[in-house]
Image (cartoon, rainbow, N blue to C red; front, side, top):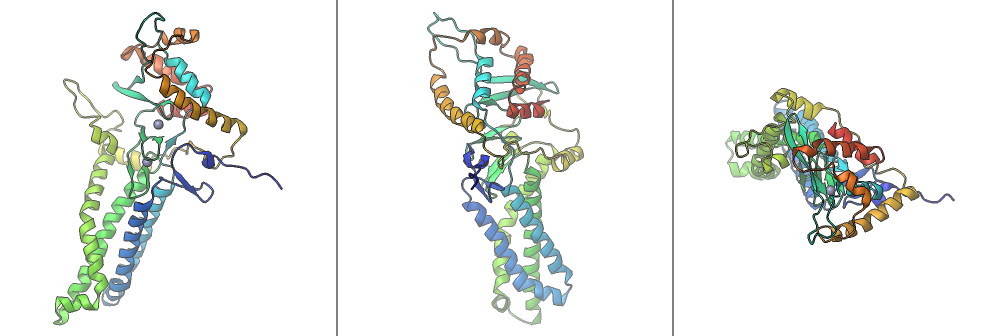
Length: 372
Ligand SMILES: [Zn+2]
Ligand SMILES: [Zn+2]
C-alpha cells in the first residue's frame, strides 16, 4: 500500500480550521458563523412557510420566486466568504527569514555598550505617497502595503479589511467582493422578509379581524418581522459603510486607523484610489482575484517540512535576540546594511532588497508581484 501523502493544510502554521481535505478553510472559532447561518435560514424558512403561500395565492407567485433566488444568493455569498482563503501571505521559510535578517542588519560598534536593533520598517513610495512596510515578527516578512496580521487567525492577510466573526473568517483581498455582496444582499433579504410578513399580517386584519388574531393565525410572520426589524438597521448601516469604502477603495482597517486622513501640516491622499467612485467600485468588485498563495492542498515534501520545523525554532530565537546586546556581527551584513538608511533614502534599498529576495523565495516573489 502506498504511504499516505500529507498535505500542506495539515502542517499549516496559522490557527485556521480546515475541512474536506483542505478544500474548505475557516477561522479557528466558528460558533458565531453558525448563529449567522441559523438566523438567515431560520428567518427565511418562517417567511417561506407562513407568508409566501398567502402572498403567492393573493398576489403573484413571483414573490416567493424572487425571495428564493435572493435567499440562494445570500447563502452562496456567505459560504464563499467564509470557506475561502482571504489572501493569507505564507510565512517566510528559514532561508527567506535569514535572508531578510541579513539584509536589514545594522553595523554596531562591538565596543559600544548599546545595541542598535535593525530597523523594522521600510518606506516605499506609491504615487508620491510614503507608505511604511512593517516587519511581521510572526511571519518573518515585511508586510506588503495594505496587509495586516490577523491576531485571531495568526496570519498576515493581503489587503486586510477586518476579521469578521459573523462570517467566521478574515475579510481580505480574495474574499472582500463576496463579503460585500453578502451584506448588500442580506440587507435586501431583511427588507424583503420584513415587508412580506407585515403585508401578510396587515392583509389578515382586513377581514375585520383584530391584529392579535392575525398574529395567532400566522405566528411565524411576527417572529420573522421582529428578527428582521432589529437586524435590518445594523445590516443596512454596514452595507452603506462598505459601499462608501468600496467607492473610495479603502479598507475598514485603513478607515479606522485614519491612514489617508490629513496629518499635521501634511497633505495625505489615498494612493490606491483608481480616480473616481465608479472605477473604484469596478476595481474592488470586478478586478481579477489573485490566486491563493498558501497552496493548502499541495503535497508536503521533506524540504518543505524541514523549512517549517526550522522556522518554528527561529521565531523563538529571534524574539529572544531582538533588542538585546549582541557582540558579534556577521561580516557580510555590514556591506548590505550600509545601503540601508532611515527615511526616504532607504526607498531604493528596500525595494531592491525585496527584489533580491524574490530570486530565491517563492512566497516573497509573490509579495513583489503585489508591490510592483
Ligand atoms: Zn504576520
Ligand atoms: Zn482572521
